[in-house]
Amino acid sequence: MHPPDRDQTWVGLSESPLPVEQAAAWVVEPNCGGVVTFNGTARDHSDGRPEVSVLEYEAYEEQVTPRLRSIADQARLRWPTVGRIALLHRMGRVEIGESAVVVAVGAPHRDEAFQAARFCIDTLKATVPIWKREAWSGGESWGLEPQHVREIAELDSAVRIGGSDAARSADRHDGALG
Image (tube, rainbow, N blue to C red; front, side, top):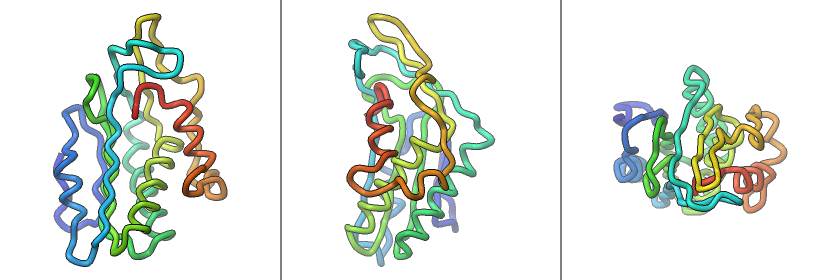
């Protein structure tokens, strides 16, 4: 998984460990003084699920890349000064402590970088068809019950910084992803 040569958007799925440091460095540009990187790592528990030992991700791959690109496009419409955006997600088995998702955003100022990064992760979790299987001390589940993939347009009025419906839904239903 390598960043694009000319494009300002880097999206992708990988069965290998995500290039967290490379994504954070890639969004740095001379005109962007604000860089925000969100690194969602697999944790060893989630609500009602102690001792999570396995996380495995599956995706509707044909839909993932276009949806990730659309999220980046929407972020740029909302915050026109945003520079590069990286949206990367793991597939397959992810060990506890490994990165499952990385969002990196560069912008001239920190406020736009923070807002755009928050929008990107919240919208990714609510609209991109990626499913997670968890195994924990009391069982296992694909986690399909609480998560309903929505269209970005459905979230348009809901996504607000610091308390969006999408953020609350993602925080409540993300299982062992941080």
